[in-house]
Length: 363
Image (cartoon, rainbow, N blue to C red; front, side):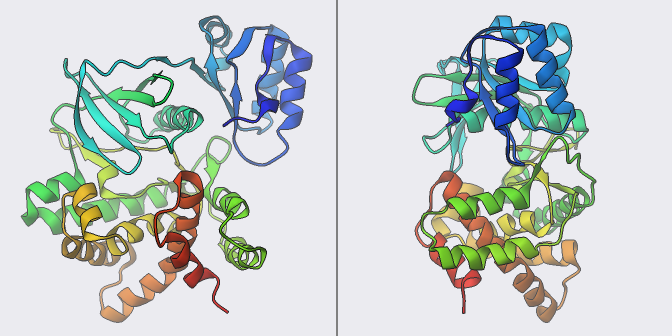
């Protein structure tokens, strides 16, 4: 949920905008809830624009049509992401076709759009953040589907996207054509390596190490001593400003009938050390159960283990058993850290926190 400090009301003037900017004291993205803002004055627009240009990172959600129009007409909307109030959710024109840990996916009956309806662990602010990042990634130049409207029925939040007719995720291709496992695994590893070599716009996107650090500080399952141990690792992560997907996995790459590969599900896109990204893929290929492997990827654990081995070869040049084990030992603490981030953000699954402690809090 947004902090009350970032829920202005009435007519937003220069003084109110100054208070909003002054309250952004941390180096993190902020969500400003404009659900009670009736209108915004030009002087306030100028204050927010100047703050954005000075490096403050924030987006606006739940804006009225009049407020969105003022941002758009003035051109300030080109610098600050502004989302309208959600429209009423009506899924009667959609048919379910898939599911993940956090959402269910639906295709529109006219074939033009697909909709993600999120579960209770995903707040409206997180959906607005996913939309803002998807728009920013498109402007940044990475291949990704177009994003659309936010919907809500009061209990659930949804977001629709451009539907890529005939598309398949990399994991779906392997499930349907197992003979292509090695080809697709290497293609995914090369895409990941290219992404991790791409310089990121650090003024536009989030520092993923900082996001993980904040998750550690908020983790109620860690004692103060355990937090100190984990933070020593976080603070020793080498600084990097190249792109990270934030949820690196084969299901988050789709390929079109024309052969174009697109990244999807970019809500945690940002920058930082590449192993912060590789950590998620290690977790999903080496640490989940058979039932989860089938649900998420339509694959068995033996397939996922083989995919990881190929990834290690193509991504890191780890070919021998000793080289692969060395790569795993590099990734392991990042995977443990990412378990804390996922648990704090979406809720801990059984064993996640114990695994993180066993890796990062050893004497």
